[in-house]
Length: 163
Image 1 (cartoon, rainbow, N blue to C red):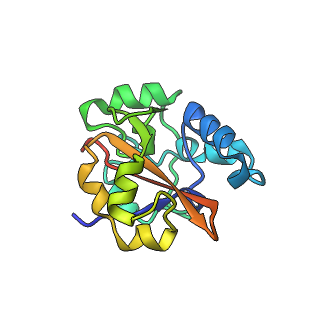
Image 2: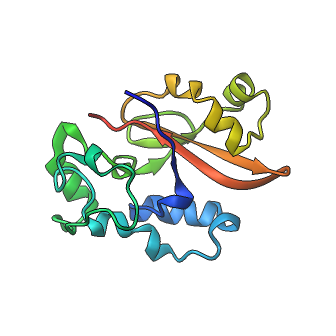
């Protein structure tokens, strides 16, 4: 299995609570982007069990197949997908301070220093060193604030689904 980074800037996403938190916390990054755009994946139906073979869609973009949501809520989709999960960002339904299942948490400063020799890594640094993913468990995610010219510029979200 090869590792892939999904950039939030390329995939305005998914669950209401998650999207609202990100939209609020990182307003400097997404001030021009309406919250509604973040919620399109659920409405598009690009999750298990609506699409059973998600890997066939990669990379997912605005022109990827979109059969439409087959559930009335994200919670209903998660219940229907059972132990397999939705195989999408929908499985990560909250932000936590520390790693836990179904959550995205910041990569700790100690790990940023270990892998990038700074607490302010750039996109190029992260793209060239994905070793931090070895510490991420299935059903968990991490985020890293990426810097450009010493200023926050992007957010990297990385993680694994349950399947």
